[in-house]
Structure formats: structure tokens, C-alpha cells
Amino acid sequence: MRGRASPLRLQSRRQQRGAALIIVATVLVMGVAWFTVGALGKAAPSVAQREIETGRALQEAKRALLGYIAQYAARTNFEFPGRMPCPESPNSIGTANEGLVASACSNTAAVVGRFPWRTIGVEQLRDGDREPLWYVLSPNFHPTSFPLNAAPPNPWLNLDTPPQLPFDGTMVVALIIAPGRALNTLSDPAAPPAGCPKVNQQVLNRYVAPLNPANFLECGNASGSYENRGTSPWTNDRVVSITAADWQDAITGAVADRLQRQVAPAIASWNEIELSASGRSWSSAYLPLASPFGDPAANGYCGGAAIREGLLPVAATPACDTNWSSASAALLVGMTLQACSADATEMRCTFLSVLDTGPLSARITADAANVAGSFRRPIIAPDITTNIAGSSITNFSLTASGVTGGGTVQFDVSLPPPPLSTVVEVLIPHLANAAVLADASLAWFLNNRWQRHTYYAVAPSATASSATPCGAPGDAGCLEVHGLPASSGNYWDKRFVLVLAGRPISGQSRSGAGAGDITQYLEADNASPNDRSFRASFFVANPAAAAPPYPPFNDRVAACPFQHTPQTGGPVTLCN
View 1: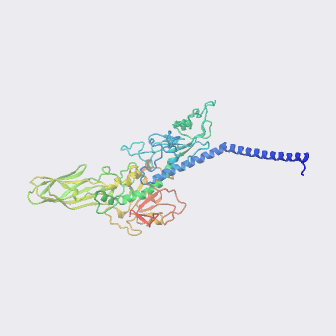
View 2 (view 1 turned 135 degrees about the vertical axis):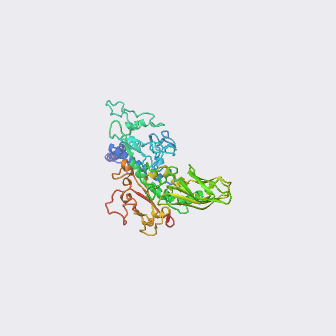
View 3 (view 1 turned 90 degrees about the vertical axis):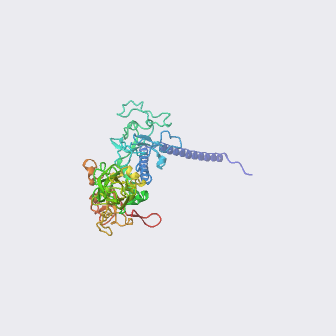
């Protein structure tokens, strides 16, 4: 039979159990204390940690926004390369539209709202106080149509579009603002600095639609004179800007890509486009002469005699006058020439019949300026009409000259004998605009006036009536482009070149006298007209490149022909 434990042994066991409970309790208390301290540390990060988190959110938002406009600028069906998105609507909070751009916003006034993170394609970015970011857009940067009256604010977008959002003494394209925690400075006895009224943002309707910017932003950021004051008891906003240079650099690569993929092929095939659209084409295809380089804002964009480099000759009629300006008649049989005169639609030559027997005839010649420096639809023999039934047009020819820049039409007109002293009229229609000037692939380029930033050079061999060959490297009829990848094809056989001048760099100024100075737009030998050689890059080794260190350079070159290799299949040559 087992005996009972002694009192001393029982007391020892109780002491052991008590010590174990104390140890367990101590561990639990220490664990709770550790968890509480950690949780408090996470719930109340330091000021420095909050500022770091805010800075990261602002920079990520800026990168995402610039990337968003760059990828839209590259889309071939997007009519406004560089158009900025609207902010989120103030009524979107708590709805399915939260994080999406508003359905519409002004292009004539600054627009403010939360950052449209879902449209941009990022997670909702928050500052160090866990507040969503805000976004302010300048006027001029959200056009939605091309009105007939192009008065400011600009209904078009290009590198000349002026920012109109005031920020710290300058004008910017957009702002991204971290609003910080809600402030209440009403009870602060100190006097606030100028432009910073006291506020109470700790209100019940702070997060109720429509959101009130004044419940989140302070000082000038709430009144439209935007600023970044830094550390202050009166504002805790933190701001980053999208400058004009940021915006320009984000979109110029995409615009240059569209020059190569859309604009250059359309220019190269403008005669084929015309044939498809109207059934007419020039029998001897040519590329128009250039408009002499000058202030792009005041240039006529009409090609001049023997001018091979300058600006694209994209002026339509009547801005660039290619109407028949003079006409004459020879080899008259049975008629006398009375006069040839032009109106807005045609050249009209009138004759008086002096015979009433045998067929009447005349050889007529009409001349027009600027034809070889323009995109114009040709006329054909059936376009020539008379007021005498049974007349015929034969020996018809239409030519353009790369030397004079003009065009000439010549033909014989024959008609049965009308009654004596009958007035005979021969009508020669003026040349209409070529279909390429209304082609969808050029609409974004012309409507946004990108021709103001695009230098144009045509090879001697590609101009009208040229006999200068381009069949081998070094031929006088060729243009050369150095610095393109070898996969893009020959460097020496370019029929024409487009050079997109980026934003001004390295001290360039495009105002005043600089507005007409090519060196203020292009760099290196690109700014040396008529040397037949262009440079696409200073960062690719090639025979024409200068030795490092390379000078500042931001020209972007498109050329024809140009070879590229798609993801599937072999190389494809554009605008050959």
C-alpha cells in the first residue's frame, strides 16, 4: 500500500507549480508588450518615415503619369499625342468610378481632383498619412476636338503648347499633390503667412462627395496659386510638378516613331494615295520641294524653286497658290485668241471663230507656280472642257519642274466649225489639294501642327524632273542618314528625311532671331543645309560620328526607305 506524501513534499510541488506559472505569465506579458510596442511603432511612424513614403508615392505617380501619356502618344489612332488625362471626378468617391478619370474636363481652366490611379494603371497611391494623392491639370492640355477657330487657348498639342498652371513662380503642365493629414489651425494664436488662411479640415463631410479640395489642400494649393511651401504649421502638402520639359521629353519619342510609321509612308506614297482616291496620278512621280526654312509659326509651308531642305510643303490651296496664272495659245486654225484669265476655280481662255468651214484648233499652254513644291491633285485631259459640243482634247501633258518649282499643262483642242464669230471658251480647272493632305494617317500631324517641329529634306533624285541619279553610295542624287541600326537598311539611299526637333537644349532659343535659325532647332551637321548627310544619333558608332565626348543632341530622324523586322517574318521595307 502506497503511503501519502509528506507535508514538506507537497509544499515543494506547490512552489514548483507557482514558479512555472510566474514564468508563463512573464513570457505572456513580455509578448504582449513586444506586440504592443511593435503595433504602436507601425501605427505611428516617424515624421521622416512618413516623408519618405510620401516622396515615393509622388515619384511613382509622376513616372506612371508620364508613361501613360507616352504610350497613348504612340498609338496610331490617337489624335492628340501628349493629351493629359482628366483628374478623377469629385463625385466618384465611394462609387464604381473611383480612381477613373472624369468623363470630361475643361481645356480652358485648371482642373483639380484626385489622382486617377485606375485609369493610369497603378494601385491607389497614398502619402505617409495614408491619404490618396491629388492631381491638378493646366489649361491647354486636354483638347477634345479641332475647332475651326484656332484662337488661344490652343485646340492643338505640340512642343509649342504653353503651360498655364502657376507653380512656385513658373508655369507647369500638371501637379501631383500629397495632401497629408487633416489640419485644424483655427485655434492657433499665431498669424499665418500671406496666402495661408487658417483652416479646419477635420470636418465630418471631409470624405463625402463631392470632395472639396479645401478640405485636403492648404495655402495656394487650395486657392489656385499652387506652391510647395515645405515644412510649415499652416500646410502639410507635398507637391511634384510635370514641367514642360518633362512632358516634351515623354512624348517626342512616340511622335518620332509615328513620323516613321505613319507620316513618312504617306508622304512617300502620296501619288499612289491620289490614284486610289481620285483615279489620277502624276505620270512622273516626285516628292515636293521644301518650304524655305524660317520662323515655323509664320512659314508659308509652300515649296520654293530648287529648295530641297526646309519645312514640309503641306500648305493647302489657296494658302499656297498653285492656280494657273498665265496661259497662251499657238498654232491657231480658224480662231483668234481673245484673252486668258483665271478666277478662283479655273483658267478660262476665250477665242473668236473666224472660219465657218473645216475644224478649228489651237495648242494651249498654261503655267502655275509652286506646283513642284506642293501636294496637288493632277488634272487629266477629260477635265478640260469647252462650250462647243463635239470638241476633243489631244496631246495632253502635265509636268512639274524641280528647277523652277512650277507646273505646266499643254494640250491641243479641236472642235467642229461653229457659226462665224462664235465665242469659244476653253476651261482649265486649277489643281486641287492632293488626297494625302486629308489622309487619316496625317490628320494628327497636321491638325496638331507638328510640321512646325519637323525638318524636311528631299533627295535631288526624288524631285520633279530630276535626272540626278541615286543608285550607289556617294551618288549626288542620294541622301544619307548615319547612326541608324544596320537592320534599318542602307544608310545612303534615302529619298527624303524628316527630322523631329525636340525641345530646345544647350542654350538654344527659338524666340526672336532664333525663331528662324536652324541651329536653334537641330544639332550637329543636321543644322547644315544641303550637305546631303543627316545624323540619327551620337550614341552609335558610325563613320560620320564625332569622337566622344558627344555634344548635346536630341534630334530624331525618320527616313524613306526604312527597313524594320516585325515579330514574325522577315524584314519589311517601309516607303520604298
